[in-house]
Structure formats: C-alpha cells, structure tokens
Image (cartoon, rainbow, N blue to C red; front, side, top):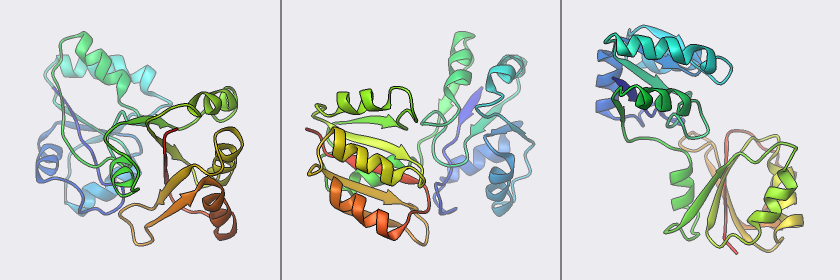
Length: 220
C-alpha cells in the first residue's frame, strides 16, 4: 500500500507519532527533495531507504513505483513540507494507485494554509484554495475572475512575487479588500500581517520578504 505522510512545515516537532511509526516501518520513502527529508529522518533516527519523486521525474517514475507497490512493497510519500498533493507532487501517483486498486492511506497532519486561514480573522467556514497563481499566461484573467468570488480565497506565493501579487490584487480586485499574509509559519520569525491590500503591499515593499508565504484574501 501507499501511505501519504504530512511532514512539518517548519518546526520538526509538528509531526504525529503515527507518522513517525509509519516512516520507520515502510520499505521505502519517496521524497520531493531527499536532502530536505533526510534532515527530518536523521532528527528522529529513521533509517528507512529513501528515493526521490518530484515534479521533474514523477511522470517517468510513476509506472515503476506502481509495479513495486503491486509486488507487495509498502511505500510512504512525503513532500518537503506539508501534505503531498497540496501544491506538491502526489496527485499522479495516487491516481495511478487507485487505477490499479492499490490501497492509499493519507495520514492527517501539517498543511500550511490551515493555520494561516484560521488565524487570519477572515471567514473560514467557506473558502476556495487557489494555490499558486499562474506566473505569466492567464494570470490577469484569473485575478479578474476571482474579483467576484464571495468565499475567502487562499493563495500560496513565493517571497519574490509577494509584493507584485498584492499590487495586482489592488489593480484587478480591490485595494481596500481585507487580506492576511502569513510567512515562516511555525518557525522562529513567523509573522502575520493583516490589513487592506494596499496597506499590506506597502508594508512588505518597505520591509522586504523572506520565507514561504500564505495569502488569505477576503471574498467579495
């Protein structure tokens, strides 16, 4: 069977006892970046064999992984942080496993957008997850479409594009729309900035940005 294992988004203590047990017991761990995952495994003295599965090789490797699973090998898939499949590799392998009646079990655990959404102070009873916006083609079109979305909207963004994204929110959606930006969640320099789109854009333009970003935008 295939286990999908959420891993910490920063603080290494944010992993379940069950997840650690599974990582010790499986025959193979598939990691987005083996160097990153080895830090977690070494911290908990886990010596399970590890191999890479990421966006650049997953199409080539999925078939051979399914063959191993069909032969009785038990595998766990992890991403660098959070839950595989959420803006990370995972979907293709899961789809193929289900196609061949291979059991898939996903453990509950860390996902960056959940704490950011909950502590944003914006409505979280109904929300839509957008992940990363298109970098170029279709970006403005998508922003204009989202301008009328009434549910709270969740985005992931890199520190290098955060200010650009907020300025585009102001241009194509509404400069006075409420937004919450969280960065470095669970880490030493964790920060959340709330306010209007224009005010938060100005804040990060002057401050500079580091770390992984979650943006929570109020609905129309």
